[in-house]
Amino acid sequence: MGIGRPIASHPASVYGLPAMIVSRQLLCVVYRAIALVALVATWHQNIAYFGDDPFTGTVRFWKATLLTPASVSITVDIFLLGLAVAVWMVAEARRLGIRFVWIYVVLGLLIAISVTAPLFLVARERRLQALQPVGEPTVLTPSDLVGLVLFALPALILSVWSLLR
Image: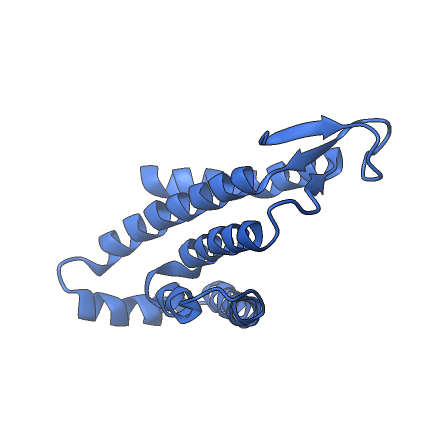
């Protein structure tokens, strides 16, 4: 099974450019890479912030997230996104029979939802593969690829910047 291959005749092809079939294998690689970058980038900052006293550092951390309108905005946004993701993960886990979904949810609160959500997506792809080894492929158009790259660039730049500062 190839990881991805262009197909010109697929309905998702745009302007004569071939769409790209993305295999579950490649999606799992991408999801794992996102989880790893998220773990390193978030916990590099958390460890620096918490210092030698994790309890006091945790209290200071949450106070800082509610300090300015900008920090409150991003905190509320992340929590509401996390809630939507948790609801979807639990529903999807029940639908597909994925075990231990609450571990992903709880560790999302304790570690980072940006780490556990991609790991859940890996478990989901593996379960889908087990249930339906040959199914409809995921097809990304050239516009999708451009959009995903443009979405990924700021996240990657911010992650690298946070590690180097």
